Length: 173
Image (cartoon, rainbow, N blue to C red; front, side):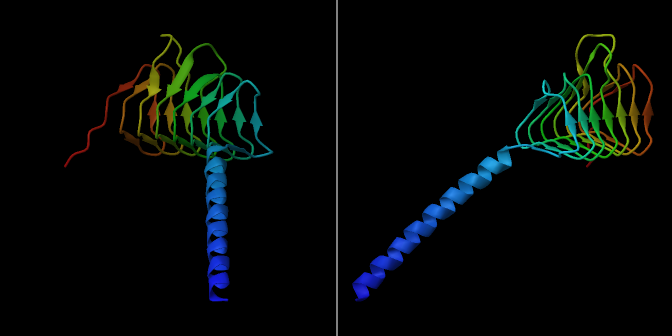
């Protein structure tokens, strides 16, 4: 009788491990898929990476490319030939790019604040408009032909007219 009970417990443990492995695989698959809110408008030609979250009332244009694990909060817009690197967060009301000729390239790990505007790249054909690891707080405006390096923080309402270059930010000890 004890041997039968031991075998039954072993079978239950094996079954529970198998179910746990299946649910873990499902969670990994689910984490890799993207979520697009039903009230968002994403053009069918847009490229959206894995693990992206696009909130309500967002728009993503036909030539836009959204990197893996990005978050577009409610009412944010990615337009024109705009490339958003991996793990970027675009907060409510922010506008990236434009539907005029030129390409806007935004690096990885950037946070673009509420109602910020990042203009389009106009004259040269291509370069990163914004580098990696930047915090661009609310209502900032980065106009055409600006180049922003890496590791910078811009306070609320910072305004850059066209052709501004901000180098890489260095941390002081």
